[in-house]
Each structure stands twice: as C-alpha cells, then as structure tokens.
Length: 63
Figure 1 (cartoon, rainbow, N blue to C red):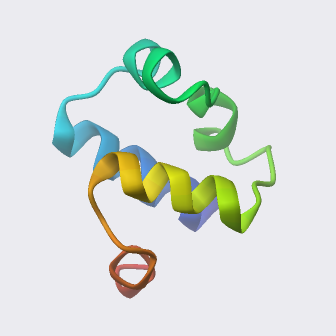
Figure 2 (figure 1 turned 90 degrees about the vertical axis):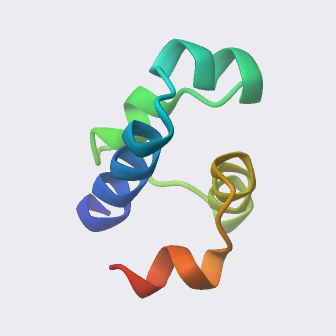
Figure 3 (figure 1 turned 45 degrees about the vertical axis):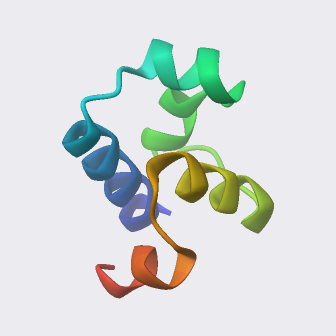
C-alpha cells in the first residue's frame, strides 16, 4: 500500500494538484490514501488514475 500511496502522491505533486482540489473534483479523500493507511479498491485507483491522466498500466510500471 505504501508504494501505491507514494506513487499517487508523486503524480499529484507533478500535476500541481492540492489535496483539497483533488477532493473537490473527485470526492475522494486522497489524504487518507496517501498516508498508506487506507486500502483502496481497483475502481477507486482507476478513478484516481483517470483524474491524473495516467493509465493503470503506466501507473504500475513505476512501482
């Protein structure tokens, strides 16, 4: 989970998106996910990847 959380955080920083903006746009509480303490579904990860403009395949290439 930590690797996935760190990858999400990295991508969000690269896009210059705040946690608040992420939540407003997606209704996903990204802070809990990025802390690595919250398990997420594949569906949620897919939504996150769509929002960040990356495919699931590319997301996992960097992990």
